[in-house]
Amino acid sequence: MSDLPYLNLRKFLDQFPLGFPQTPSGTEIEILKKLFTEEEAEMAVLLTPIPEETSQIARRTELDQEVLEEKLESMSKQGLIFRVRRDGRTSYSAAPFMIGLYEYSVKKMDKELAGLCKEYYETAYLEEMGASNVPGFKVIPIEKNVAADLVLLPFHKIKEDIKSARSIAVTECVCRKEAHLTDEGCDHPSETCLSFGVAAEYYIENGTGREVTAQEAIEIVEEADRSGLVHASANTKHLSNICNCCPCCCASMKGITKMGHDKHKYINALFEAVVDEDACSGCEECVERCPVGAISVEDMAKVDRGRCLGCGLCASTCPGESITLHLREDRMEPFDRVLDMGMAILEGKAKNTNQSNRANQTN
Image (cartoon, rainbow, N blue to C red; front, side):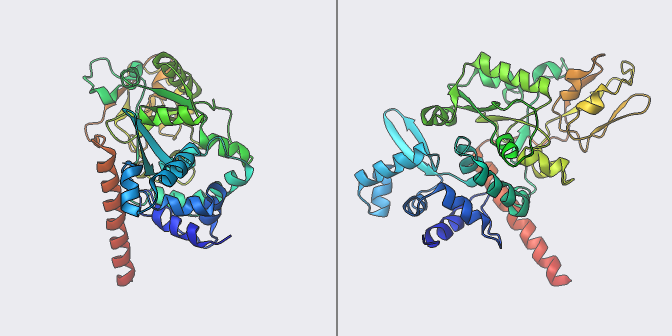
């Protein structure tokens, strides 16, 4: 087996906003070999991040359209590239490692692949996820925990967003599945990852997720809330997914809880928990409930807003209903489009790299 197709694919994937950096051990190449044949690796680099029909790809690459159609359809059904079907037409695009190849591998995740992904995360990908200081996810709490007098935009309302979705799919949490396969993990619910629209249709057709109704999706989110999971979605106004994240397994959360990194590297907190001091009994229920250790109790609960995710888990467990969520006055609103977020991440990475290079030259 030649490594060249996989080396080329690694370089190609590294051009995405969340890239695919090289490691001294070559773990990333072993991941690609586990997922792609040589021919599939060569085919993947012919695509772009923008969905194209096979006729367009054939003209651009000068390859036979029928051959392309067969190979790209097969790859899309394996979760190696993305596929969109609209009005009887099918388009294909390259998939980044995250959100993409990693998540699409949920049904094929075995002990070997889980071990490789864990090693890659610890040696390279955690740093890559936080390299831009632009959060790729936003936290969206259940509305019942939000102060009643707040006027919220549609993308601040998780249940309203779910109800407006055209298609909805649910699948296993790939982070928790990986953790269990590497002898870690937790007891939180597993089938909690929700996708919407074209992403849901992709999961459903590929058999990597099952179709659910809006009410079923809301019940999944409510069960996740009861279990103490943080509801996070791509940091855009359009709802494409909801990850119900635990602090022990989630790729973004682990950077905060296990590595002590600033939450804003990974997660955009739109809300913050506010305590009604007159109503708080100091029972400490919220202390255990907070996934990031943002609450302490002396006579009453105190919230460290620098750490608070605005997830509302403390509010949902407070017996005296003394905690509510308020929109942060200094909040960063989600990006209008995925493209805008991607450009901001690339710019942030370039800026931080330049600053690091200047610092090294000074030293």
